[in-house]
Amino acid sequence: MTRSMKFFAFENHGNLSDNTYDRLRTLLAEADVPIHSLKTSWISIQTQLDLRVRNYDCCIEGCMAFTGEHKKRRKYEYCKELRFVEPDGVVEDDSLFYPDFELYTTLKARAVFIYIPIIPRLKLLYANQTWSGKMRYPSTLNSEDPASANEESESNEEK
Image (cartoon, rainbow, N blue to C red; front, top):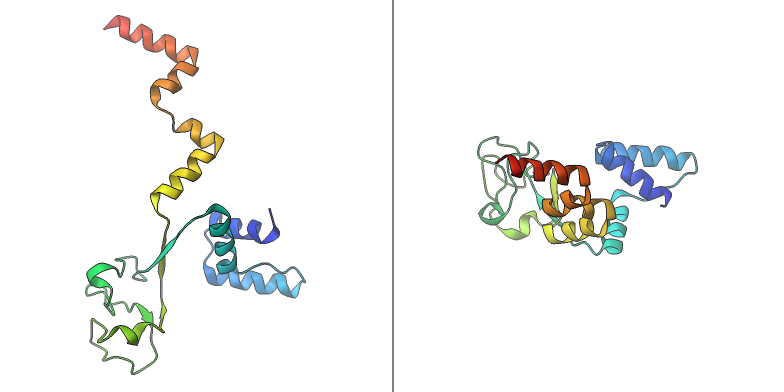
């Protein structure tokens, strides 16, 4: 595993924010230990594993994702948090929706939910020998363990 992938795994397992990871990258670069950005690492993993991830803008509070009928929404009506980092004067302050699609295509989302579809995730689990063994049908799991098979047959006899 490359150095960048080790740091990428550390970021994910350590629950670091993207900003903290970027600061770590800067410190490592100053020490002549360059590592790839999160975006570059994500693209590398997606390519190697043939994953098609989808990014959805979401509320900074985690209330909702801006999809479907909420795709043109500027802010969530209950928590009133803005969807994007907006320069002053882009839209009227009390407006819940953007007037047109073109207006928000250049803005940066405050929070993004990364969605990996279920089928590629299941394929990866079945490709892993440990997990594929754990995901077998219960009857095949019991047949591999003679002690559990004996316990099961004794419980059936008692009924």
